[in-house]
Length: 184
Image (cartoon, rainbow, N blue to C red; front, side, top):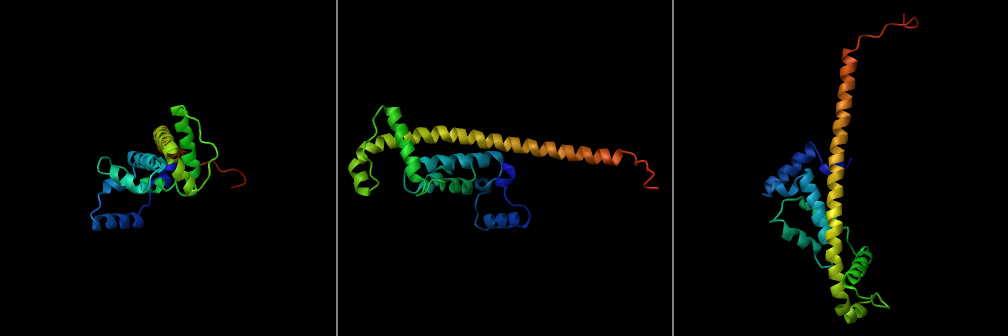
């Protein structure tokens, strides 16, 4: 399930990754594939991807000295906000900011640089208030969801391994079946 999808490679590929990390003296803590590292990476990437700013990946890198998380996952999640999704995400954050600040939305929005430059003063406060609120609230939800899915995945795997072990044990301990007339 989600854990297997996010856990990463095993075998030769994993040893190549370990060799790469060792060769360039990269700390392995920033490439961890355990539950905490992965959920933190997804949450941090989601947070910085929701903030309207250039070079959102630099925000992820600015946090690395203070927390251990899976940096490649965080950077990949930042890419969920891209030029195709920016308008939807940022407009939603602008509307949330207006709601929180009790402001009216600007009428006659045009998707041109000249229009945004002329109205940036009216847009910026609502956009960043909404972005911080949405990034924080959604981030907590995403963190809890991924954490829950990871735990559920581990329990599912353990349950199925235990069931398979019980079936094998039952087959080993059961007596040979009595031959029927057709088999003799």
